[in-house]
Image (cartoon, rainbow, N blue to C red; front, side, top):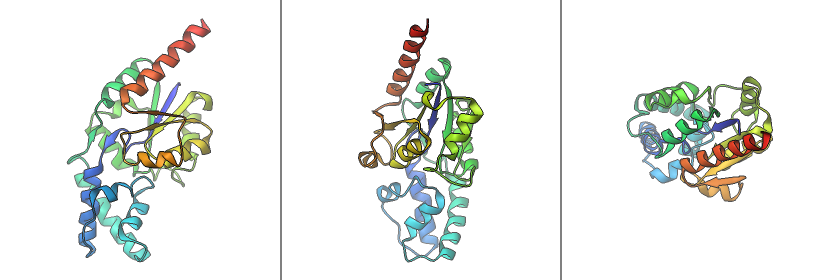
Length: 224
């Protein structure tokens, strides 16, 4: 692989608690009782507007969803790094991949400004050539526009790119873009990978780095 495209929440970072707190603060603001953190984590992955719709329920009006979204984003922006951390092994895996010459990017449905601030706050921004969010393009994942843009900008063939994520949304994104996909078992929604199986699965970030680096070294040996 010459390019790894990472999802953010549930793949690079464990943001579950800050997202849950922010959603529940929004619900209280809207006159609703809080939800269980684990339930909220199943709502994450399709972007903040969808998160608000799921968190409010089908009975909420578009006006209520809009108000909730505005309140949620303002609160979450101020509290996005209260408890959020990189998953164990992520910094080391990214360092090893960068040292081996692998290009890396982030493609998430989270707003791009918040995504960049989180990566900067956790010291991870330096590993990524591009960071695109849910408002970077006209359409979000699983639409292929983000992957297509990255491949074009970074000059990488589809056969040499791999998307890494924790949910069926990521698998569908890769399928729509015609690239391979690796699922991670430690993320928010690994159960969704049963309905949309990836090409490979890893349990730890260092496992991914080891596989990618070994594949690149084998290719180099074959070419020589």
